[in-house]
Length: 331
Image (cartoon, rainbow, N blue to C red):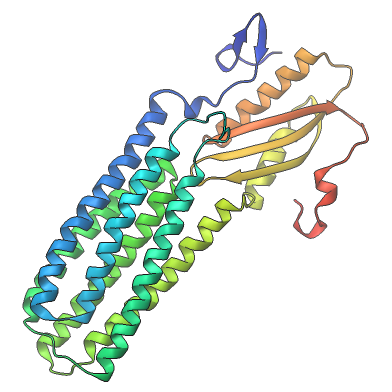
C-alpha cells in the first residue's frame, strides 16, 4: 500500500516527502490576511483612543485616565510592531532560516511586554504622587463620555481579535488581544473612577483605580513574557499532544515503535520530529511510503505542523535522545 496520490509528489519517477497541504494554497493566504487585518484594526482603534483620551486628560486632569491614555499609546506602538512582525514572520523559509521566521512574532510579543511593564511602573509612581499630593478631577463628565466610547471600541476589537486567534493561533495577535482585554477592564475602572469623582469630592478614587490598573498591567506583562520565552526556548508541546503523536506513529501496523520525539512551536506553527522502527527487510521505497502515511495522519491531527520522520531497522542498538533525558521529564 502506498500513500494516496494526492498526498505524494512524483519527482523523476520516485516518491518524495509530502508537504503539509493545510499550509498550502489559498487557506494559508487567508490566514495571513486575517492576521494583517487584526493588526490594522488594532492600530486604528489605538490611534482613535489616543486622540480622544489625550483630549479628555487635558480636560479632566485624571491620573486614571492618564493611565488609560498611556496604555493606548503603547498599544498603538505595539500594534505597529505586531504588524511588522506578522508580515516578516510570514516570509517563506530561506537558506539562512530553514525553519522560517515564525519566532519573530514571539519577539514582537516580548517587546510588547516591555512596553506594558514600563507604563505600569510609571503609573504606580504617578499614583503614589497623587496619594501624597491629591489633585481633584475636573469636569469628569467629559472623561465619562470618552471612556464609554473607548469601552465600545475596545469590545468590538476584542471580538474580532478572538475570531482571528481561533483561525490563526498567532501569538502576536494573542498578545495584542491580551492587552486589549486588559484595556477593557482598565476602561471600566477609569469609568468607575470618573463616575465616583463626579458624585464625590474624595480625591483618592482616582489614584486607587490607577494603582489597580497598573498591577493588572504587570500581571499581563508577566504572562506575555512567559509565553514568549516558551516559544523562544523551544518548549515542548503539552504532554497530551506528545502522547497523541506517539500514539499515531505507533498505531501504524508496519511501525514497531516510535521514539526520540521532539516538538516545538512558534505559536502558529508546530515542528514535529521523531524516529520510527520498521522491519529491516522492507525496501527503502516501502519504508518511505510508511513515513508518508504517518505524515498525512499527523498533518490531519495537527494542521499547522511540519513533520520530519527518521526510519531505522527495528532492534538496532544506538544512542537515543530519550535515554539522555531524565525520566521525570520524559513522555
